[in-house]
Amino acid sequence: MRFALYQPDIPQNLGAAIRLSACLGVWLDVIEPCGFPLTDASLKRAALDYGTKVRIVHHASFETFATSTGRGGGRLILVETDGATKFQDFSFSTGDTLIFGRESAGSPGELYKAAHASIRIPMVRGLRSLNVVTAAAVVLTEALRQTGAWEKLD
Image 1 (cartoon, rainbow, N blue to C red):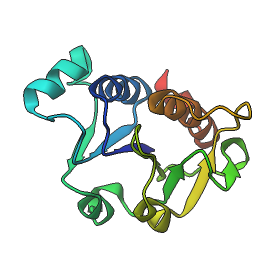
Image 2: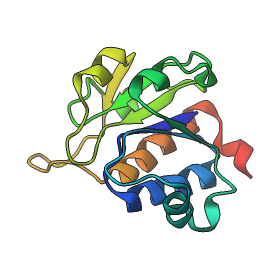
Image 3: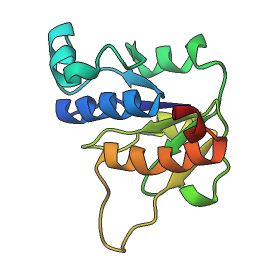
């Protein structure tokens, strides 16, 4: 299981994503360009002491991410507020990569075109969205439950 951040805008969200990935044992893909300078120093600062415990891959663009062999050909699942299927009704697989759009602008057309499926988190009507890392935690929880990955963490 992997999760990907498409052009993240907020360095604190990247830090939280690194911590979430490390604690849940999932790969993190960061697709640039980011809305902040992504240097070794800024990444180390965002990661705190989780940097050595996370499996993170940087991609210079969405094209390099999409053609990367490191994902092993698994499905790309777009998590978006207008996703076609509720996340709890979706059948996850161990090779899936959950991808999340930019905090400020959401997901561009290229993500929708590349995705094998789009899912959403049901929310109270009239509210815009959850924080991207909060949404990742919600969906990853269900994906890990369905694939039996929780049992491998203890």
